[in-house]
Length: 422
Ligand code: ADP
Ligand code: MG
Image (tube, rainbow, N blue to C red):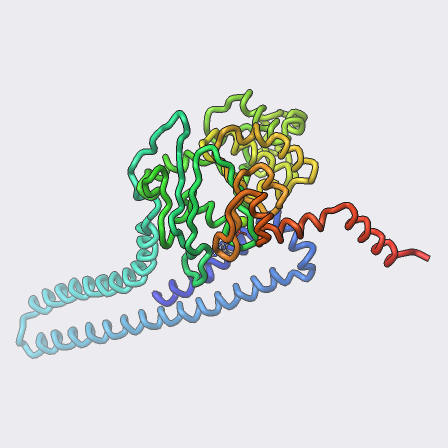
C-alpha cells in the first residue's frame, strides 16, 4: 500500500493538471482547437490513465495477497492451538471447564492480535501519506520570519540598497542574478533595461520579497529587508507584474483590491491608465464584473485593456515605491504613447522602477541600469550610456533603426516588389 500511495502521487498530480487546467480553462481551449485537431492531448491523457489503473490494480492485488497470507498463517496457528487444547482435554490433563475457558481466552487474544496487525499495516501506509502532508504544513516560510515594523514616513524618505546580491531559483544550477549591487534614493526614477532572461523580473521579486537572495542582502534605510515584518514591508510597493492577473470581480474591486473604494480616486486611476472612457460605457460602470467566471453579466476585455486596469491598480495603491514590469507590453502604440504622456501624473513623486526592453521607455528616467546575463553591465544617464557605446547603445540603435520611417518605407517597397501581381 505504501508503494501504491507513492506511485499515485505523480499520477494524481498529472490527472489534476489535465482535468482542472488543460481541459477546464477556456483560455487553453483556443490552443487546443487550433493546434490539436486530432485530440492528441485527450488520447495521451487516456493512455496515462490506463497505465495508472493497470499499475494500481497490480499493487492492490499484491496488497490483498499479502493480507490473505497473513490471515492464513493466523488461522493455521489458531487451528493448532485448538488442537493442543483439545488433545489435552481429551487426555484428561485439563477439565472440560478449563477447555472452554482456554478457548475463550484464545479467541480474545487472537482477536486482539488480528486488530493489532491490521492497524500496524494500515498506519504504516497511511502515515507515509500523512508525512508528506506534515512536511508541507511545516515547510518553513522563510520570508515571513522578520518582525520589525516599517517606519511610517510622511516624507516617504526610503532608501534601498542592493548589496552584492546573487540569486538562484530553487532546484536550478544557473544563477539568475550574480553579484548585483545597486542603490537608489527616494524620488528617483530608474529604468531597468536588458534582453529577455537577463534577470529583470527576478530583481523585482527580490526587492518585493517574493523571493529571498541566495547570497548578499537588500537594505531598506540601512536594515536588511528580511528583518521587517513581511506584510508591512510589501505595503510600500505597488507593482504591475509582467504576468499580472485580474480577478473575476468588479472593475472597482480590481482597482481598489479589498481596500476602501473611493469612486473619485478609482475614476482618476482609470483615467490615468487610459481606461475610463471604456469603463464608463460598461453596463454597470465601475461595478461591472470582469469575465463571466462568476457573474453571468460580466464583460470580457482585451489583453491591453486588462493591462491598463493593472496600471490603474498600481496607481490606486499609492505606495512610496511603484514598480512597472513591462507594463505596456500588451498596449497598442497609441495607448502606450498616451500612458507615457501621463507618466508624470502616474509616478507623481514616487520612487519608480520601470522595467522594459523598449528603449523608448527610458525617456522618463534620469538613471538607466542595464542588465545582461544576470549582471548589471551599465548604469548611468541616457547621454552617458550612449557615449559609452556599450550594450545600451547597441540596443538603442537596433530599435531606432528598426523604427525609422525611411527603413520601413524601403522594406515596404521590397515587399511590394516581391509580391507584385502581374
Ligand atoms: P527577464 O525579466 O529579464 O526577462 P527573468 O528575471 O524573468 O528575466 O529571468 C531570468 C532567468 O531566470 C531566466 O533566464 C530563467 O532561466 C530564470 N528563471 C526565471 N523564472 C524562473 C523560475 N520560476 N524558476 C527557475 N528559473 C527561473
Ligand atoms: Mg521579465
